[in-house]
Length: 396
Image (cartoon, rainbow, N blue to C red):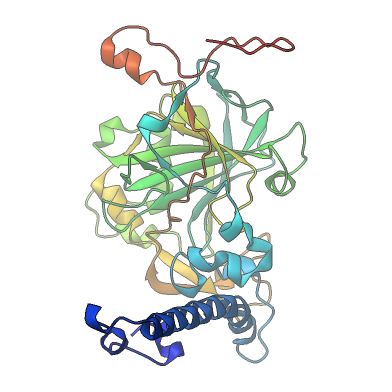
């Protein structure tokens, strides 16, 4: 029996009691059914609204005596009453997660893509920067060391401004059929690497840009299973620092995994060398895929994947999820330690947000599918040159 059914006071017998035959239909039975339906819908709406009040109360007040205040950032997860369906309810500042109409991730339908010949190549600086790998409890994050200079800039493509690489996140599943946040024609991939940069021409910090228009660029690379020889050198280096495997087949593979709250320094990493070829891509306007789901991101999904081995994926699935430690005094501080998060028995895998509606957003690409299929230059679905004059209409 569902929670709503318990709230209304009926269970499996409800269908039997309200079933009628064609011979017994009457205006009175129709009125009775209508009344029951209205009562049912009213209760559902009441229950949904009630969740917005009692869940925050539970999360805030159900703490051991003497525990310090807990940051909202610690309490969201990817399942249950703190999962994606409730992000916009448990914290009013996250309302965009439920109300926004430009949310991410989305399902990419190749037949619905708009070929835009005006999309330029994306430029990524070649230099390398050092940073830190962190197990944030909900996922793995690589953050660029601010003191590492020169910074790596991203320009061109669909971007009108210059963006600086700031962070990188890895999403993966507990099986090979799921793990990525974005999908292609309804198909998910085992993992997805997301790279984030912020607009340095308009904003001074990543936090400021995240809350502001044109603030963030988000690069997405879908990851599929393949041989190690197909990997980029930098991606192999990244995986080694995450798993700390001593050798292939080592029984100690999991011993070096980052525990919740732990941080591990990483040597200089070249974003240009980490990614696959970036000449062809898909782009749309979307949001952050974690609370508060700010709609300030320009997403760029590359046409080429990265490759991960079965062994590396197995090691990732050994990572554990973290939960806030109520006895720690400075939870989610800027320099958090392993004591700020307690280790959960649950695996970190399946740390992806469900697909969000596109709401008629244009999804553009510089991939000319029809041209490659026919072996000839095809007409663009978006016109390169468009001219307008007063009191006239443009015609193709």
